[in-house]
Image 1 (spheres, rainbow, N blue to C red):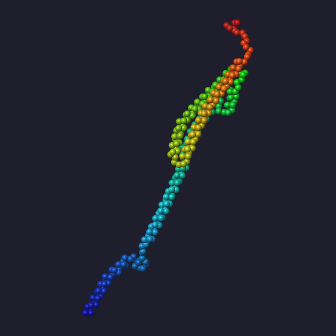
Image 2: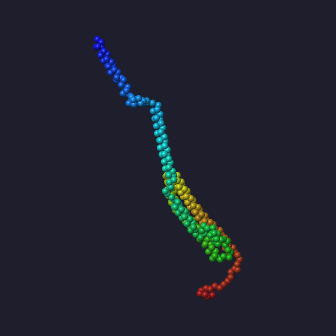
Length: 260
């Protein structure tokens, strides 16, 4: 009986060991290789993982902010370049030509020009006191000269008026162009230059207005001076006519081919 029982106990031990072996081996298979050899084990830390994600997000945000800053600086440089861009249009030459044309019309004034010395000399000679000793021919010649001055002044005024009216169409085109350039200016410099040219155009128009007023004033002054001198000449002639003289003196008269 004893010899038969021992093998059975040994078989039972072997079977129990065989059944326990998978349970003991399975943790070993589930562990990494370095854990099997005693080098340590990996532990997952959710807090550390969250901090790493937050750090990465902050770094990405800083990079985005730097990119946005660079874009803003680039746009600022572009705006500065636009502000410094010059206006590709200039009406200054045409404005100067209009002013010169009006000045030429004023400089072509007849007889008594727009010159102080010339005016003083002409008034002393032609519009001064009428001499009682002047002959009738001299009085007539002086009166005609004054009349020519008056007519010339009126003609000069009309020429200046015609020249200024001729500038109106040119000024209108320039004003339209400059206003359009100002409204469509790419930067501050272009808008400023367009505004300056508009001011120059306005100054030229004021110069034309002053020229017309000066020409009209000159013609009116010549008319008044002629009237005043004509009144003085009439007084002198009336005085000479009323001054007692030697009376009638008889003389010889020849009639019919020299017979008496």
